[in-house]
Image 1 (cartoon, rainbow, N blue to C red):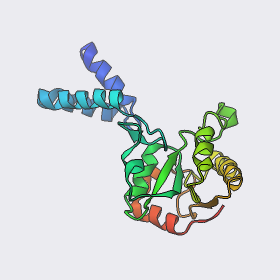
Image 2 (image 1 turned 135 degrees about the horizontal axis):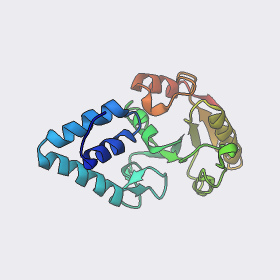
Image 3 (image 1 turned 120 degrees about the horizontal axis):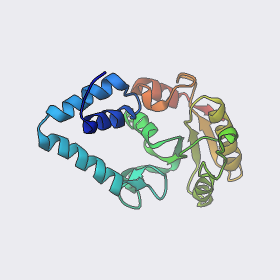
Image 4 (image 1 turned 180 degrees about the vertical axis):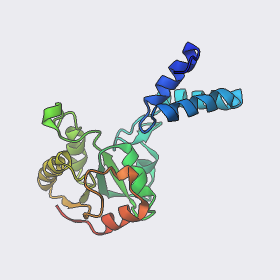
Length: 199
């Protein structure tokens, strides 16, 4: 058991709360931050504070944004009629890494899970309905995890979309069941995207 000052223990504890960071990694990060030049540690703290203060959900798709719309929604070269539905903003990076998807995204924020109290309202279904009501969307690509919640969410979205005469496809089964899109390599994501099938 280490006998460190309370501030060091607190920093280690907080770093250990990050996803994928266990106690040993948190200790290594703590020691790194305490040994690195002060300006490096302060730059990290400032970047974190700035991101928390200035980043918000895009008013159209739910991606991270610093203004009303995210850079992808503002890009006039993107196909606004082709919308990829993802669970969270971090999933977008996997598709962008392929360099082939030129549509836009819609971030749900959560998947349907009645046992966890997540219904259509918590999933942001109304925002999706509003987007479909514009008549601009011609295809929805369902890119949610292959899990019970993902299947329920896909079925729900398919029903909404068919009411708007929107073509619905889903990723081919190239992604691992229960795995997150954000952890998949670009080739797997690209193959799954190019092999999408009607939902």
